[in-house]
Structures are given as structure tokens and as C-alpha cells.
Length: 117
Image (tube, rainbow, N blue to C red):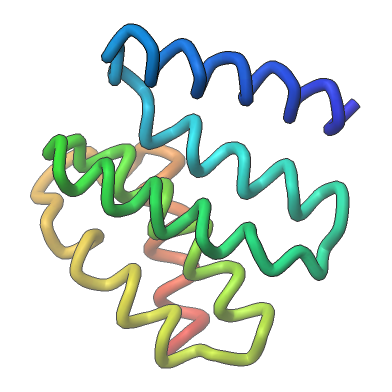
């Protein structure tokens, strides 16, 4: 099933590049990293996809997509034993929010930050 997801994501990324339709583009990048990790938990390219999603979301100013990419990258860093890096990636994005703290993404970020403290 993840293989099919990768194929669909490749098509969506290609479509976004060909048409300059960038809505949701940062999440496509992040999702590709997530699927690559499901296929192979040791896949080193996943980090690059998370970083690309984080940068694209930051550039667009789409803070919720930036948070999701930061969460993915922070979880990966934590799993590699890099708690300081995980916190450094997630904390500034989480700190930007002033409301919506009951949304699943913000709840997950809060929990992960507490775990990393």
C-alpha cells in the first residue's frame, strides 16, 4: 500500500510543478517522507522530504503545514536519539500559535515537546 501512495504522491508533485498549483504542496513533501519511512524505517531520504516540506510551508506562511512538517522531522530526530535537534525544530513553530491548542496537531506537538524536555 505505501508503494501505491508513493506513486500517487509522485503524480501530485509532478502536477504541482507543471501547473504551479502549490496549494498543499508542503504536505505532499512531508507525506512522501512519511511513506518512505513506512516502506523502510531506515530511509535516510525521509529527512530531506521533511525539511523540504518545512521550508515550503515556511515560505508560504502556512503555519499548520509547517507544524506538521516540524512534527514529522522532530519525531524522526527523536527516534534517532537527537532530542535537542527535535526540540529545536518543533519549539519555534509551536510557539507561533496563540490559539487552537485543542487541535490534534498542536496537542501532539505539546506532548512531544514535553517528552523532549
